[in-house]
Image 1 (cartoon, helix red, strand yellow):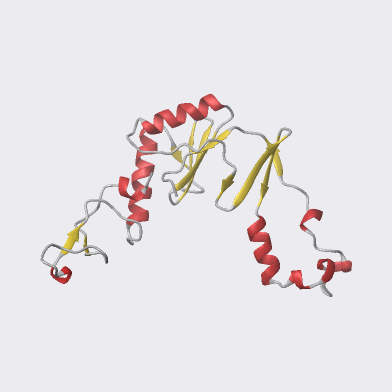
Image 2 (image 1 turned 135 degrees about the vertical axis):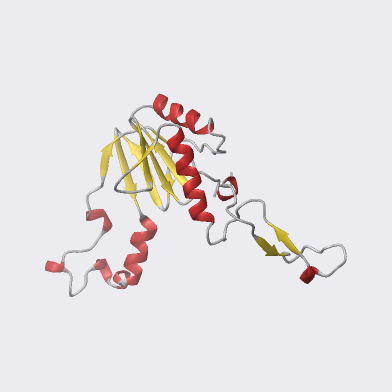
Length: 188
């Protein structure tokens, strides 16, 4: 589901006729399209969408965090927003389903993608009562940028005590399991 077109347009906006579309008289330069909905790529579309979404979420009891405007709370349910992707998390599946039903009651079109396994490049795995977060692409990018893959065993002159720099040496970040579901504002 596309997010930005769900928000009302703020003012009259026009755009050139897109390539590949031909107007009946054949002269595209004499015509423009009036937009009825926000489109991805417009300067104000993200801001308009965010204001619209927050207003809808607040109408069903969510409160925006004072510390991070991309986090909203409703009782024990947390809604995490990043542009047009979102996660809902709560201690129980019933609380998640209740929040989803409340959000759908606002006429927002949402896509339920089930249990979250990847969000914004973070791989999320549940096993034995723990939740593990990994960012393999970011880690690989950092290693490549620092040219740490060029050295055998990942050791450099500057490594303290010549200790190998392996990601497997790093402790795993774990937390207690919380049921969650991905509810993007759009199917990106």
